[in-house]
Every structure is written in C-alpha cells, then in structure tokens.
Length: 556
Image 1: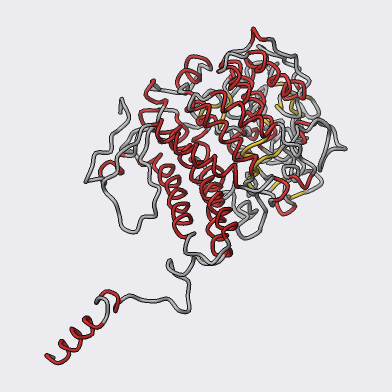
Image 2: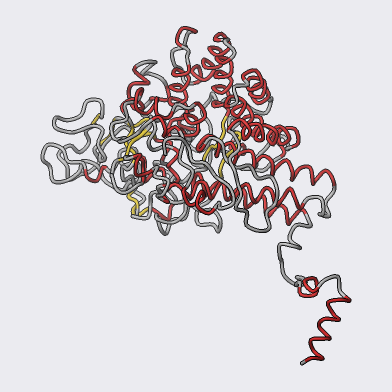
C-alpha cells in the first residue's frame, strides 16, 4: 500500500498536477470541450437558440406562452383557475409563486447559450469571417433576451461571460445599463448579419436586427436613433408591405390582410415581402412542434385559446348549439375553447374610434357574423352576429365572441385532423394554429418609426408612417391632431392584435397598468396596481443568491 501511494505521489509530481492526470479527454464522443470547433458545431448551438425563442414565445406551456398577452388591454380570462391568465395579479405575480419563474429561466438560458458561443469562437477552426457571423448571431439573441428581461423586470443582472461554476453574488444592473448593453449587442448584430435575401426562412438577418434595435432605442428614449434604425428597414429594397392578394387562398374570398395569416403565406418563398422574422412550424415533423396526435403537446395553441367554445352556445332555449364544433370553419374557428376573451376595447372601441370599415376589421379578419351550420338547430342556415346578438345571449362570453381569424386556419387544417373533410369536421386533437408565426413584420416597423417621430415632436412624420399602414387597410387616414402615444398603441392593436407580445410593448413604455385598467377597463383583472408594470424578481433567485443582495422590485 505504501508503494502504491508513493507511485501516485510521484505521478502527480511528474504531471502538471494531479487534477490534470485525472481529467477525462473525450476522444470518441461530443463534450463541452470538443463541441465548439467547426461551423457545424456552432450551427447546432445557434439552432438551439431558435428553439429556445420558439419555446418561450410560441411552444411552451399552454398558459405561459400567452403570459405576454393575458392581463393587458387585449384579452381577459374566460375560465378562472389558479395563477394562470392574470385574473388575480396578487396570485399570478406573487414572487414566492413559481408560476412566472419559467420566463426568467428561459431567457437566461438564451443568455447562457450565447455567452458560450462567444467565448468559444476564438479557439474554433473557422475563418475570421465565419467567427464574426456567429458572433453577430449570438449577440442578436443575447440582446433579444436582455431586452425582454428589461421590459418584464426592469434592471436585471448582466452576465457576459461563460459560467463554469455556480455564482451566488449577482446584483441588478439598472434598466438603463441593461438597455445600453442590448444596444451594443444589436448594433454589432445589425452591422454583421446577412441581408434578408441571403438567409433561409426563419433565420435572423440585418433587417431583423435593425427592427429590434429601433424598438430598444425607443425604450431608451433615443428617438432619433430609433427613427434612423427603422428607416434602414423601411428603405430596404427587399422589403415592402403586401398590398395585393397573394398566396395559398388568393383566389378565394378575402383580402390581403387575411392572406398574411393563411397557412404557407408567411415566408418570402410565398412572395411575402413584409415578413422580417418568422417563427417556423411544420406538422408531424421531428422538431416541427405542431403535431396532429395530441393537442396538449408542444405547439402554438392560439386557436385553442383565442377562438370561442361555440359548442356550448345555446340560443332561445335550444338544447344544441347552432354551430358544429370542432370544425375547420369561420363559425367554429377550429377547436377553440374560449380561454382568451377580447376586451370590448379591443373588439369594438378601437374601431368605433377610428374606422369600423377598416379592412383589418372585416369579417375575414375579425369574425363577428357566424353562419349556423348545425342541421339540428332551428337556426340552421341563418347568420348570427355578435354585434346584434339574439335576446338573452351574453356577448362576449366564453362560448361566443368576435375573434381574430389570424389565430386559426379555417379550411386549412392538416388533413390528418379531419374526421370528415366534406363537412370540415375536425378531430379532438385540433387546437394548434397551423401556420408559421410572425415575430417581426414591416407594418410594425412603420409604427415603431411613427413612435420615434412622436418622441421627436414630429407628428407630421408620425402621421405619414401611420397612414402607410392605414392606407393598406383602406382605413380612414389619421391627422396630426389624432396622434399621441395612445393612438399609436391603438393602431398597434388594430394592426397586430393578438399577434403582438403586448406585455412587452406596454412594459417598454411603463403603461401596462394604465392601458389595462384605465384605458381598456379590462373587466376580469383583479388586484392590479402600478407595481405590476413590472414582474417580481422570482423569490427563489433572491434566496439562492447568498453572497450578494438581489433586490426585489418596488411594491413586492
């Protein structure tokens, strides 16, 4: 035994250290030490960043995907239960409640992945040009994550290095410091990413970076810089608003705004020049998310959440609904369950205050007229209108309300979901939205630039940009007297609706409470206060940060 100890001791002396002797070298499998060498290695890591973004905003838990929409001026909870859907802010936003914690975790996962990419680039075998391109991609996603954290939480800890051991001494940077870091990252990304014509569908590009940079400049009240960044997107010759019918249903009744959201129409390969960054979905493909075998699986469930549960509607004492459900029709909306009921402000007021005949308010885009298609109902063949409901019918209610057709795909569900294609009857596994999803599109860039112009006290420029968007919708043009931040936020509702991550927009402006309670009078939001303009820092993060103080947001 003594001889063995001596041998080990001598071995440790002859090696640089005993720990070096014990270190394992991966020779025939991938490890953290040998996985960041070639461009293929870095592509895999970047692909994971796309997946993390899709998981956070479109494919995660059915409830938490829509935390960016519920509890704002857009919608309210159609089925109260637990902490989900922001019907009680004291419950949902309790720092000790783990309900919101996944967002903090997911966004910092993006940060960690990007820091790993950046730290491993110098030692890779790639050319300098390729290293720069991957650095640009990583910094775009890092900026994207920190921008989102800043809008949700205010100032947060900034970490720009790859972490190898747990740290317990984080402190919060100010929101201003976070936004400054985001701007630095996005400027590098915008200058070094590829043009939009040189990337695959779903990939980030220079216009995506400049669009996001414009938004963050707005958050930092750098209005001229925001205006200039948006201008670089708007003036890009490869981008333009879609003004004519196009795509998969262009020969069917509808309009160009309706076409923007039909299956297969979101990417540039469909002729769409308005899309800037599109989240990709495929059906029944590994990694594609939107499968047809289980509605409770991973996929974007806007159809399920934001279309009404017409199955439960009863009119004039009848024992059946006048509408068949689930059906791939406007009258059913697919397989909606009515969790997200639109506020009256969203469904009616913003149109009454502007132009009810706006294309974006047509029945193709906000379904108000429903054709009774149940042969067993005495109303069969008649049209029921949410604006003139039958006596005794509450509108809106979970079983019947005006809904945005962009949340579903009438007549275009995957063939595997049809129980009867002739009647368009769907199986119980429907409920996803079977189309790619816009994260950024050019109409929003115009509205960002209009907001920047307003900040510059140039209402003439703001009016010009807003009216570009309104002209496409054949809507009455606005005047300079119309324009303030509320008008722009209303116009974002008209143009983007449930497509927008509304909590981020209102959080960027510090107006979540004001717009939800004082403007929209959201009817089912309880215990909301000014403090809820920001989410609380998760208590578990504060608790585990034992070597420094991670301060909580005021009021919590």
